Length: 61
Image (cartoon, one colour):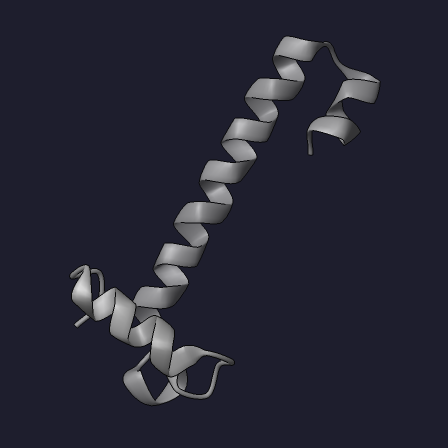
């Protein structure tokens, strides 16, 4: 995102845009993870391992 924006805008605007884009993607992934059931998680590559880690850190029940 930074490289794309730096062509059209200055350094400060590019950095802020990149940070905001990263935050939106992060929140979207968290929401997606919360919507998946245990069975759906196990269908993703490395899903069972990711599921166990998320349970340990109390991000998923």
